[in-house]
Structures are given as C-alpha cells and as structure tokens.
Length: 454
Image (tube, rainbow, N blue to C red; front, side):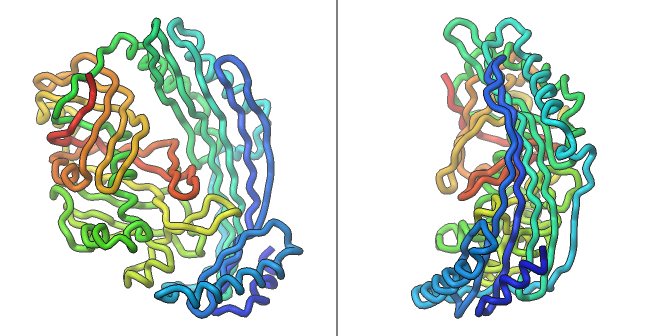
C-alpha cells in the first residue's frame, strides 16, 4: 500500500503533500425494546489527500485509486486559489518523519467474533431491564468500528495504525403513569470484544436507577455546593474547558485567545487538567494522529494555571507552540481537525468520604445527561443526584440541570478526589464525529453551583 501512496503524492507539484488511505469496517446491532431494529456490517474505503502550495492548504477526498491524478489536479488548483486569497500563508510546524506500524493488542479481536454472537450478547443485555416491571422500553446498540489507516507524506513518513472500537450503549426508559425517566447505559472501549463480556452488573445497576427515579422527587432550584462524580466532572472538563484548549477554536477569537493565554491563572490551585492519548487501554488511546505526528500527553492546566493547549501542525506553527499530536479525522472522508484524546482532571488527595464531610450540606450529582455550551457559559443535565445532610447521603432527586460560567467554576472547584475514572464510551461532535473522544476525572467539590429545577 505504501508504494501506491508514495506514487500518488510524488505526482503532486507541491511544497508538501500527505495522503491517508483507510479501510473502515462497521457493524451495528440495534434493539428498540424487545424488537431487533437493525443488524448488519459494511466495509468502505477511501483516500484523503492534502497539498500545501505557496501557503495554501487544500484537502480532497476520493474513493478510487484511478481518480488520484484528477484529485491532485483539483487539490493543487484549490491550494493556489487559497494562497492568493488568505491573509497569512499556512505554515506547518516541523516534525521528524516516522516509519512505524502500531496494531493495538486486543483481548478478542471483534473482527473475529461472529455477528450472531454479537447479536446474542446485545440481546442478553437488552433483556436485563425489560424483565423488570416499570421498564417501558429500551434503545440499545452494539457498535463496532475499525479504521485500518495508512499514512504517507512527502517528508518520508509511512505509518500504519489500526483503531478498533467496540461498545454497547443506549437508553433504559422507565414509566409510571405520565412520569417517564431515561437512564443512559454503556460499556466498551478500545481493547477488544472481551471488555463487553460479563457486564450484567452494570445493566442491572442502571435499571435500578431508572426504577428508583420514578420514586424520586424533583430538585428544588437554587444555588448549591455540590460534589460531581467522575462522569459529570469529565463532561464539564471536555465541554466547558477542553474545547477552549483546542487551538483552532480560539485562534480567530481575540477575546477567548486573551482569556486562554498561556501563563494566565484560570482555576483554583487544587486543579490540574491533562489530555493524554497515550494511556494504554483507554477509549481515547492512539499512537499517531492523522497528520503523522506522534501523540503525547499535554498538561493543559497546572495548579490552576494554563500551561498548554492542543495543536495541529498548522496551529502549532501559528501559535509558536509545541506539536501535540491531536489532529484527528472521523474517517477517510475528512481532513483531520484538532481533537481531545483522553482529557481529565488529575486526581487530588481527598477520598469521597472526606469530600462529603467537607461538603456537609448540598448535592451529590451523578452521570451526565447531555448539555450545551455558549462561549464561556454552560448548561449540563445530570441523570440523578442525592441530597447531602451533615456529610451523609440522603434521598435521590431527579430533573437536575447545572449552569455556570467556565472561569467562575474553575475557581470554585475547591477540592479534588483521589480517585480517577475514565469513561468507557465517549464521543464528540465538533465538526466531525469522534467516537473515541474520552473524558473523565475524580470526584470534585464545587461551590455555588446554579441548579435548575422545580
């Protein structure tokens, strides 16, 4: 394959060119309640060519090798047009050429598991909530995606890497009269099919939460001191903070670029945040990004101070900052953009019991349920929470929404737990879908959080 890729880019009269060829294999099994809604597999493949000419960067995707010369011609024409119509020429930060292959170690390669077995396992987990009175329906999906990637550049890089992702996730819905409650459930990762086996306890646990929510009372709106569980802490870190650590989202926004200036104090001194795609066994793990740059951990926040950000080769040169290996594409149809890998708040020193004691009175909020951001402000939903009185767990409450300002919240995180949990299922929809974008954290204590409710 590399001989073919080298031959293609050698025909590009460009200052730089790279090409990525991918084979994408996907399998889906979907249950809607007890009914099997979809089952099937498909394999597709294609190329993404990038050329840099006179400071203009152009990308084109094509699916047939026979279309390569036409693609080169179009890409060069577009690059020259761009070079004459942009204020600043595109420059790539320098990186050493890489020749390497990384095939992840897998505990049961899902490509070797029959679709019948995948169907049986998904049905087995789907039946767990459905056997309980009070559960009205489920929406559960087995999803498998394998990207077999080949990358070559005119600088001499030749990289082969596979990304294999398997998950079973969806919704469990409970109902009592007109009251309906949805709870998300999911398991999986990037380590192989084995991670999906023997997970009955997780589906039973989430079923129990869905049923308990039918008896829970709505939260009373107000301002509370709260503890966020690792899932909620991870979503806050990814959505509210992490995207502003991606250089392409702040480079053309003078206000945000100034607020996110390296060296500025953003958060409480107890708070440190890192993005590390090199952690083996985690959902967001990869060896090389889709620009052929070796992935590395990036310390983003250290003791409350902004010390780093995530880059592509273009933004690293533009900002004059180090490469990070965080330029990722959804698949062969897309050029890479800056993405998070495994982003999380780093553990502190407090146990959950100590956090509860320090909280004294407030809310313990668990499991994210979607949300949105608008600039530096955010609103996130949570699946459920518990009242905390005198440091002790009280009754379950529901209909939780938290709102806040990023910078105020970073200052109001006053204690960080000594545990760390990264999500098994993730995802991010920034421009393209990245099913491997992973987040998590320890438990954190946050003061003065606005809670919407009754």
